[in-house]
Length: 105
Length: 112
Image 1 (tube, rainbow over the protein chains, first blue to last red):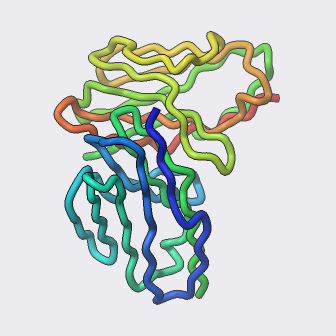
Image 2: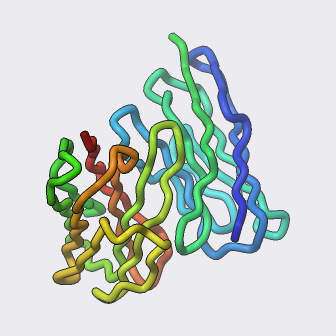
């Protein structure tokens, strides 16, 4: 089956910093989603981005489908950005192991 | 409206109990999913329903029994669970025209 790798596994930053999260996948996909899981477990949709670039406020994402990777950019981080960020691919949504982001005040 | 609701939020059950988890969406989506998430791990797919028919069962033990009574509702019936089944159970839905899935808040299950 398809493999999904996320890096880094953990990231600790100060408020106001920028960050880049990476997702590599092993096969071509027609679905790629980025999620933020909050401390209560809710998976919040950030981007549906099988290819191309999208922006939503301080967040943006780019997927280069031909090279099988996606990047999530977070600018001017806030403490509320803390949590686990998952990349998931495919119709059956295979998840990566996630990046745990901690933003310190 | 992109809301998927799940009840209950928390559930504690003994190994001999029978309980059910409920998921509901009113987005007109025709595909619905159950995922299981253990602590500090990513969600893993359990079942997929498409047009109210079970289309994927990821080799889930029979003590988990899904049901899709109509296009808006998805249940997960639980019977004779083990303590290792304690986890966050997430429901999701998607439209047939798009693969984008929307998740509910989950049911946190503890089996004692």
